[in-house]
Amino acid sequence: MPELPEVETLRCGLAAEVTGREILDVRVHERRLRWPLVPDFEASLTARRIEAVRRRAKYLLLDLDDGAVWLVHLGMSGTFVVESPVAPRRKHTHVVATLGDGRELRFRDPRRFGFMRVAPESGLDMLHALGVEPLDPAFTATGLYALARRQRRAIKSLLMDQRVVAGLGNIYVSEILFRAGVRPGRRTSRVTRAQAERIVEATQHVLGEAIALRGSSISDYRDEHGETGGFQNTFRVYERAGAPCVRCSTAIRRRIIVGRSSFYCPTCQV
Ligand SMILES: [Zn+2]
Image (cartoon, rainbow, N blue to C red):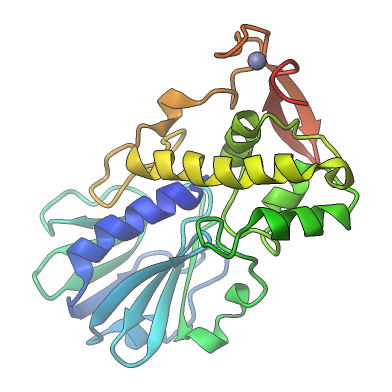
Protein backbone atom coordinates (compact mmCIF):
# COMPACT_ATOMS: atom_id res chain seq x y z
CA MET A 1 0.00 0.00 0.00
CA PRO A 2 1.45 3.40 -0.92
CA GLU A 3 2.26 5.46 2.17
CA LEU A 4 3.25 9.09 2.57
CA PRO A 5 6.73 8.89 0.94
CA GLU A 6 5.31 7.18 -2.15
CA VAL A 7 2.48 9.71 -2.48
CA GLU A 8 4.90 12.60 -1.90
CA THR A 9 7.26 11.21 -4.57
CA LEU A 10 4.36 10.91 -6.96
CA ARG A 11 3.12 14.41 -6.08
CA CYS A 12 6.49 15.93 -6.78
CA GLY A 13 6.81 14.14 -10.14
CA LEU A 14 3.25 14.89 -11.19
CA ALA A 15 3.57 18.56 -10.25
CA ALA A 16 6.42 18.89 -12.77
CA GLU A 17 4.43 17.09 -15.47
CA VAL A 18 0.87 18.40 -15.17
CA THR A 19 0.93 21.83 -13.50
CA GLY A 20 -0.58 24.37 -15.89
CA ARG A 21 -1.95 21.68 -18.23
CA GLU A 22 -5.51 21.73 -19.42
CA ILE A 23 -7.63 18.59 -19.23
CA LEU A 24 -9.09 18.16 -22.71
CA ASP A 25 -11.05 14.99 -22.24
CA VAL A 26 -11.77 12.34 -19.58
CA ARG A 27 -12.68 8.73 -20.25
CA VAL A 28 -13.80 6.34 -17.53
CA HIS A 29 -13.50 2.62 -18.22
CA GLU A 30 -14.59 1.43 -14.78
CA ARG A 31 -16.71 3.49 -12.39
CA ARG A 32 -16.70 0.94 -9.56
CA LEU A 33 -13.71 2.07 -7.55
CA ARG A 34 -13.76 1.89 -3.74
CA TRP A 35 -16.66 4.31 -4.08
CA PRO A 36 -18.28 4.62 -7.51
CA LEU A 37 -17.41 7.64 -9.64
CA VAL A 38 -20.38 10.00 -9.78
CA PRO A 39 -22.16 10.53 -13.14
CA ASP A 40 -20.78 14.07 -13.61
CA PHE A 41 -17.18 13.09 -12.76
CA GLU A 42 -15.95 13.51 -16.35
CA ALA A 43 -17.78 16.83 -16.83
CA SER A 44 -16.33 18.27 -13.61
CA LEU A 45 -12.78 17.79 -14.97
CA THR A 46 -13.20 18.47 -18.67
CA ALA A 47 -11.78 21.82 -19.90
CA ARG A 48 -10.36 22.57 -16.43
CA ARG A 49 -6.73 23.53 -15.93
CA ILE A 50 -4.55 21.93 -13.24
CA GLU A 51 -3.01 24.75 -11.21
CA ALA A 52 -1.09 22.82 -8.55
CA VAL A 53 -0.55 19.32 -7.17
CA ARG A 54 -0.60 19.03 -3.39
CA ARG A 55 -0.62 16.23 -0.85
CA ARG A 56 -2.45 15.80 2.44
CA ALA A 57 -1.71 12.53 4.29
CA LYS A 58 -1.98 9.90 1.54
CA TYR A 59 -4.32 11.96 -0.66
CA LEU A 60 -3.20 13.69 -3.84
CA LEU A 61 -4.98 17.00 -4.36
CA LEU A 62 -4.98 18.53 -7.84
CA ASP A 63 -6.18 22.14 -7.68
CA LEU A 64 -8.37 23.06 -10.64
CA ASP A 65 -8.86 26.54 -12.09
CA ASP A 66 -12.53 26.68 -11.06
CA GLY A 67 -11.64 26.33 -7.36
CA ALA A 68 -12.49 22.62 -7.13
CA VAL A 69 -10.02 19.94 -6.09
CA TRP A 70 -9.48 16.62 -7.85
CA LEU A 71 -8.78 14.26 -4.94
CA VAL A 72 -7.06 10.96 -5.73
CA HIS A 73 -6.36 8.10 -3.31
CA LEU A 74 -4.26 5.20 -4.59
CA GLY A 75 -5.80 2.61 -2.26
CA MET A 76 -3.79 -0.63 -2.14
CA SER A 77 -2.56 -0.90 -5.71
CA GLY A 78 -3.31 2.35 -7.54
CA THR A 79 -0.90 4.08 -9.93
CA PHE A 80 -1.37 7.50 -11.52
CA VAL A 81 1.04 8.03 -14.39
CA VAL A 82 1.61 10.37 -17.32
CA GLU A 83 2.03 8.43 -20.55
CA SER A 84 2.15 8.95 -24.28
CA PRO A 85 -1.22 8.34 -25.93
CA VAL A 86 0.42 5.65 -28.07
CA ALA A 87 1.78 3.73 -25.06
CA PRO A 88 -0.22 0.51 -24.70
CA ARG A 89 -3.01 0.96 -22.16
CA ARG A 90 -2.50 -1.64 -19.46
CA LYS A 91 -5.29 -3.77 -18.03
CA HIS A 92 -7.13 -2.22 -15.03
CA THR A 93 -6.67 1.33 -16.35
CA HIS A 94 -9.92 2.84 -15.10
CA VAL A 95 -9.60 6.57 -15.78
CA VAL A 96 -7.75 8.34 -18.62
CA ALA A 97 -7.48 12.14 -18.81
CA THR A 98 -6.04 13.64 -22.00
CA LEU A 99 -3.90 16.69 -21.26
CA GLY A 100 -3.41 19.80 -23.38
CA ASP A 101 -0.01 18.55 -24.60
CA GLY A 102 -1.58 15.32 -25.89
CA ARG A 103 -0.22 13.06 -23.16
CA GLU A 104 -2.51 11.03 -20.94
CA LEU A 105 -2.83 10.92 -17.17
CA ARG A 106 -3.84 7.32 -16.46
CA PHE A 107 -5.22 5.87 -13.23
CA ARG A 108 -4.75 2.15 -12.95
CA ASP A 109 -5.83 0.07 -9.95
CA PRO A 110 -6.15 -3.72 -10.16
CA ARG A 111 -7.66 -4.08 -6.67
CA ARG A 112 -9.92 -1.02 -6.93
CA PHE A 113 -9.48 0.19 -3.34
CA GLY A 114 -8.47 3.59 -4.71
CA PHE A 115 -10.97 6.36 -5.39
CA MET A 116 -11.43 9.87 -6.75
CA ARG A 117 -13.67 12.83 -6.01
CA VAL A 118 -13.96 16.31 -7.50
CA ALA A 119 -15.30 18.97 -5.14
CA PRO A 120 -14.35 22.19 -3.36
CA GLU A 121 -11.89 21.34 -0.59
CA SER A 122 -14.46 22.18 2.09
CA GLY A 123 -16.66 19.44 0.65
CA LEU A 124 -13.99 16.73 0.86
CA ASP A 125 -15.04 15.31 4.21
CA MET A 126 -12.26 12.68 4.30
CA LEU A 127 -9.78 15.53 4.85
CA HIS A 128 -11.59 17.05 7.80
CA ALA A 129 -10.61 14.71 10.63
CA LEU A 130 -6.97 14.20 9.65
CA GLY A 131 -4.26 14.76 12.24
CA VAL A 132 -0.98 16.60 11.92
CA GLU A 133 1.36 16.02 8.96
CA PRO A 134 4.37 14.08 10.27
CA LEU A 135 6.82 16.30 8.34
CA ASP A 136 5.15 19.51 9.52
CA PRO A 137 6.87 21.49 12.31
CA ALA A 138 3.55 21.12 14.19
CA PHE A 139 4.42 17.45 14.83
CA THR A 140 6.48 17.93 17.97
CA ALA A 141 7.85 15.77 20.78
CA THR A 142 5.98 17.94 23.29
CA GLY A 143 2.66 17.34 21.53
CA LEU A 144 3.28 13.63 21.03
CA TYR A 145 4.39 13.13 24.63
CA ALA A 146 1.35 14.97 26.03
CA LEU A 147 -1.03 12.95 23.88
CA ALA A 148 0.70 9.64 24.63
CA ARG A 149 0.47 10.27 28.40
CA ARG A 150 -3.30 10.50 28.21
CA GLN A 151 -3.79 7.24 26.32
CA ARG A 152 -3.35 3.57 27.03
CA ARG A 153 -2.67 1.79 23.80
CA ALA A 154 0.33 0.56 21.86
CA ILE A 155 2.53 3.41 20.57
CA LYS A 156 2.33 1.83 17.13
CA SER A 157 -1.45 2.11 17.16
CA LEU A 158 -1.23 5.80 18.12
CA LEU A 159 1.23 6.57 15.30
CA MET A 160 -0.93 4.74 12.76
CA ASP A 161 -4.10 6.59 13.86
CA GLN A 162 -4.79 8.99 10.97
CA ARG A 163 -6.66 11.37 13.31
CA VAL A 164 -3.43 11.80 15.29
CA VAL A 165 -0.67 11.69 12.64
CA ALA A 166 -1.82 11.64 9.03
CA GLY A 167 -0.13 9.48 6.42
CA LEU A 168 1.91 6.92 8.37
CA GLY A 169 1.27 3.22 7.82
CA ASN A 170 2.69 -0.12 8.86
CA ILE A 171 5.99 0.00 6.96
CA TYR A 172 7.17 3.41 8.07
CA VAL A 173 5.93 3.15 11.65
CA SER A 174 7.91 -0.13 11.96
CA GLU A 175 11.05 1.55 10.64
CA ILE A 176 10.55 4.72 12.71
CA LEU A 177 10.14 2.77 15.96
CA PHE A 178 13.28 0.73 15.22
CA ARG A 179 15.31 3.88 14.65
CA ALA A 180 13.83 5.44 17.81
CA GLY A 181 14.60 2.30 19.86
CA VAL A 182 10.99 1.93 21.03
CA ARG A 183 9.01 -1.32 20.88
CA PRO A 184 5.83 -1.11 18.79
CA GLY A 185 3.79 -2.67 21.60
CA ARG A 186 4.97 -0.21 24.28
CA ARG A 187 2.03 1.40 26.10
CA THR A 188 1.73 5.07 25.17
CA SER A 189 1.37 6.02 28.85
CA ARG A 190 4.85 4.56 29.44
CA VAL A 191 6.56 6.39 26.56
CA THR A 192 9.14 8.75 28.04
CA ARG A 193 9.79 12.32 26.96
CA ALA A 194 13.17 11.25 25.53
CA GLN A 195 11.49 8.47 23.55
CA ALA A 196 8.91 10.92 22.18
CA GLU A 197 11.78 13.10 21.02
CA ARG A 198 13.49 10.16 19.34
CA ILE A 199 10.23 9.14 17.63
CA VAL A 200 9.70 12.62 16.13
CA GLU A 201 13.35 12.78 15.04
CA ALA A 202 13.19 9.26 13.54
CA THR A 203 9.96 10.14 11.72
CA GLN A 204 11.64 13.04 9.93
CA HIS A 205 14.73 10.98 9.20
CA VAL A 206 12.94 7.85 7.90
CA LEU A 207 10.40 9.75 5.79
CA GLY A 208 13.08 12.07 4.44
CA GLU A 209 15.26 9.13 3.46
CA ALA A 210 12.33 7.29 1.88
CA ILE A 211 11.32 10.35 -0.17
CA ALA A 212 14.95 10.80 -1.28
CA LEU A 213 14.91 7.18 -2.49
CA ARG A 214 11.58 7.80 -4.26
CA GLY A 215 9.55 5.60 -1.91
CA SER A 216 9.25 1.85 -1.44
CA SER A 217 8.01 -0.54 -4.08
CA ILE A 218 6.74 -3.59 -2.26
CA SER A 219 3.87 -4.50 -4.54
CA ASP A 220 2.34 -2.28 -7.19
CA TYR A 221 3.66 1.16 -6.31
CA ARG A 222 5.19 3.11 -9.20
CA ASP A 223 6.07 6.78 -9.58
CA GLU A 224 4.65 9.11 -12.24
CA HIS A 225 6.72 7.41 -14.96
CA GLY A 226 5.91 3.89 -13.78
CA GLU A 227 9.32 3.41 -12.12
CA THR A 228 9.88 1.64 -8.80
CA GLY A 229 11.25 3.26 -5.63
CA GLY A 230 14.37 2.17 -3.70
CA PHE A 231 13.57 2.44 0.01
CA GLN A 232 12.46 -1.22 0.27
CA ASN A 233 16.15 -2.17 -0.02
CA THR A 234 16.93 -0.31 3.20
CA PHE A 235 14.28 -1.79 5.52
CA ARG A 236 15.83 -2.49 8.93
CA VAL A 237 12.94 -4.49 10.41
CA TYR A 238 9.89 -4.51 8.12
CA GLU A 239 9.32 -8.03 6.73
CA ARG A 240 12.67 -9.15 8.22
CA ALA A 241 11.37 -11.56 10.91
CA GLY A 242 14.11 -14.06 11.83
CA ALA A 243 16.84 -12.10 10.05
CA PRO A 244 19.66 -10.58 12.14
CA CYS A 245 19.27 -7.01 13.42
CA VAL A 246 21.53 -4.64 11.46
CA ARG A 247 22.78 -3.16 14.74
CA CYS A 248 23.11 -6.08 17.17
CA SER A 249 22.48 -9.29 15.15
CA THR A 250 19.59 -10.43 17.40
CA ALA A 251 16.85 -12.10 15.33
CA ILE A 252 14.09 -9.64 14.37
CA ARG A 253 10.72 -10.60 15.86
CA ARG A 254 7.27 -10.43 14.37
CA ARG A 255 4.21 -9.83 16.54
CA ILE A 256 0.60 -8.92 15.75
CA ILE A 257 -0.39 -5.55 17.21
CA VAL A 258 -3.87 -4.18 16.55
CA GLY A 259 -4.33 -6.67 13.76
CA ARG A 260 -1.14 -5.89 11.84
CA SER A 261 2.24 -7.58 11.67
CA SER A 262 4.82 -5.65 13.65
CA PHE A 263 8.56 -6.15 13.37
CA TYR A 264 11.11 -5.18 16.01
CA CYS A 265 14.47 -6.01 17.56
CA PRO A 266 13.98 -7.27 21.14
CA THR A 267 17.42 -5.95 22.09
CA CYS A 268 17.55 -2.51 20.43
CA GLN A 269 13.92 -1.59 21.12
CA VAL A 270 12.55 -1.21 24.68
ZN1 LIG B 1 19.09 -4.97 17.48
